[in-house]
Image (cartoon, rainbow, N blue to C red; front, side):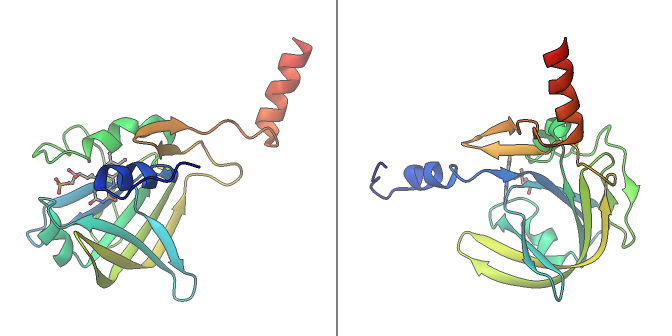
Length: 182
Ligand SMILES: Cc1cc2nc3c(=O)[nH]c(=O)nc-3n(C[C@H](O)[C@H](O)[C@H](O)COP(=O)(O)O)c2cc1C
């Protein structure tokens, strides 16, 4: 293992060795305007009470609006939703153009076709250096379907990735059987 001297580039590179999923957090700002930001910092915190977290950069354009948001939804992206990740990772005025949404229970826009959606109320915010850590209390859950999940969008070493199919999953096992017999 390489022992890297500590600087920001190497710090980022080191953190990039930890693969994550990708989510878009959606909410409504104090003026009611929709908010959406791509995050890889989403994680679980507590089962009881049900808590999740993500962090937002203080320098993000939408930072103040997120601080004021009372509710938000974490939309977990599938591997076919890279375009949504890109769309909400830009400080653009037209983030929502062409994006159809459904209404969450608490006024936040919810993205269709996601692997999972967790609707939350703002629970706590903590100092996280140049980011702030947002802790949400989960009020509602949606998964795209029962049974084996669709493949997620993965972020690793600064790039989007795909998970290898699970050889133990029934459809993958069927696939390999078909290949063997074909
Ligand atoms: C895969 C990926 C993960 C990201 N994760 C985060 C994150 O966890 N926190 C964050 O503040 N920004 C993250 N970003 C960057 C923001 O999405 C980006 O700065 C966005 O423009 C912020 O929205 P705003 O400009 O409307 O405030 C990520 C970007 C990508 C592509």
